[in-house]
Length: 147
Picture 1 (tube, rainbow, N blue to C red):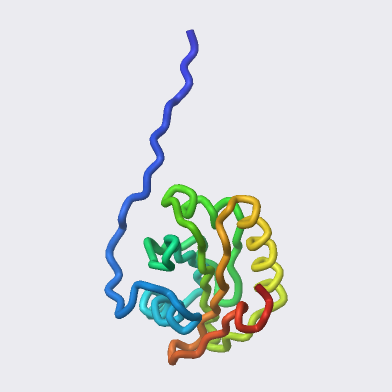
Picture 2 (tube, rainbow, N blue to C red; picture 1 turned 45 degrees about the vertical axis):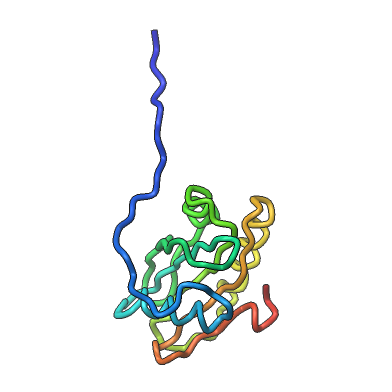
């Protein structure tokens, strides 16, 4: 007789993030929450904000921690927490430790790739917000017409 492992998959709450707002109605709302989450990080972090059908943030997950100027992002790791948490949509967020929130060609390419993947899964990518130096400097790829 042979055995096949049976797994249970669940999200484990790591901590609670104290924020002023929980509903995302604009890119600035997403940036405010992201700045609270990414305070004092010295490398690039790629994060997903998981939202319910009313745009309430139901969870945040760090997908990748990179170097000073890049991080590796794969659709599989990006959508895994959203699927497990039954998120209706995502806001992608990452920081630029340089302080300049201008999107790179790679930022634009991965955003388009993830938006296409989200369409297949039924999980809409609402925006990709790039956080700059933490003084309310950010770039919204939705506002720039990229999403």
